[in-house]
Length: 484
Image (tube, rainbow, N blue to C red; front, top):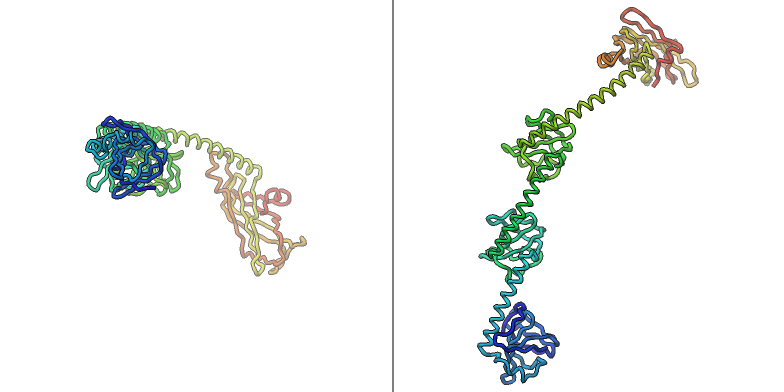
């Protein structure tokens, strides 16, 4: 390959016919590269490439040609002839070194720039210059919040002013002219040399159109956000304890981990107020520091109505009525279940008259001293004054155990009342059910046995406040005693 001096620079394709009126379409005879020399761009020609020659001159042993290939306009000085066209025909063209050809080169350059800018502008206005943000952008007057890193945007225009670069950008949510100290704040560069200015009238018009669309989408989004809030669709989990702020009769202290819906929001006096609800509570809650997020996740509050918005107040009242109604139904169901259970207990107690006796446990200490724990449920309608238990212990082979201190086989314990009467109906159930029970732990009664394995109640004597006495033994007692 031979080196050729390049006389002008690279520009885009125009396909214009030479203003001189003469040009020849020919092909390159063999590969060669344009020498960079003091120019910034090199170019390669390949055998078979089609070029348009609009100026030619043979001067001594040198060949000079003004030509255009695609987006490249240049004047060559060649040490060899590189074209397939007849050199005699080439010599009929205007002098490549003449001022007229130089003017034609400049004219083509200017047209190329115009065409390139127009093409890029059309692509930009059609939304075909899409890039992803990789740098930092800042707002200018009239712009929305700047796009964040990673956001995709459409580029409409560019302008440089001192050290600052300005880009006209938009996407579905953001639009405006944004500034940056970075030449190209994108993951893929934009050919800013041909981009229209941010001051271009068409760019401004498109920005205005996109802003109207962004505003319309934002209004629709805020409207939907408001509806979602009022419908209880903004879900959150409480991360720090909040307290009622005086609105809502069903508001109560709210604990961490509580799942709620956000109905409204307001910042007031360095505090945050939230209208919250779930199945059991509804009202306005207060967190004392406006910089604290009371939820376990960040919640976008844009579009959520104020806590004192009439629609929020009305929704709180509606939910209070609904929640209270649900609670009344639940309470009613629970009351029915409670009544059913109470009546079953009353019936059981009635059948077990006069008492249900449970031997909860018994154990011997290291010296063989025995402790017995017994509970009593009074299933009679009278008040028990005293209750006396008699029993005995048997060893592993079934023989009765003798008291190692004092002899004898009978163990006796006496419980002191009063033990209230059993409930007789649901009306007195809550009042009597606790009072008709008693528990006794008989310790230190002087019965010692190291061989005792089982305990047996042999008789129980009940003395009522009325003076009446009932004795239980045999099969009747067995039906009323439970051994745990």
